[in-house]
Image (cartoon, rainbow, N blue to C red; front, side):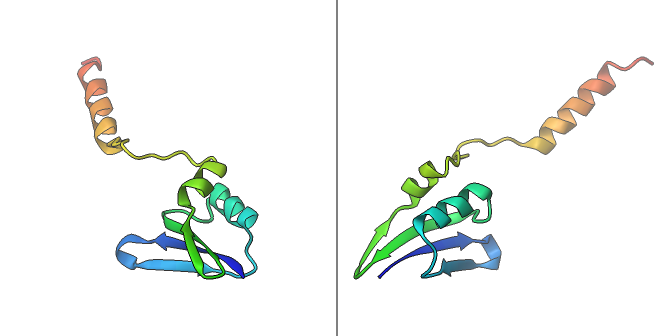
Amino acid sequence: MQYFVVMIDYGRRGREAVVDPEMTRRDVIARVASGEFSNISFIHEILDHSVEDITADIMSEAAVPELVGIDADLQAARFDHERDLRKHEQV
């Protein structure tokens, strides 16, 4: 028997494991690509008595870009922009 376990992390609210024996690899990829599965901790493929971590494979097949390392502070950027506009406004 083969099935997939998708662990979704909700932060302080906890985690949820989505396990559906009828869900195929194609279904998992489609749900990741559509955004239905987000904040994924890991994706495991269970095949008979073995477990394989296939998170990277599924993410690459779903063409989900990793946003690690992008520390954009959007609120600070907005404040900077508003300050610049005030500096250059006519008095």
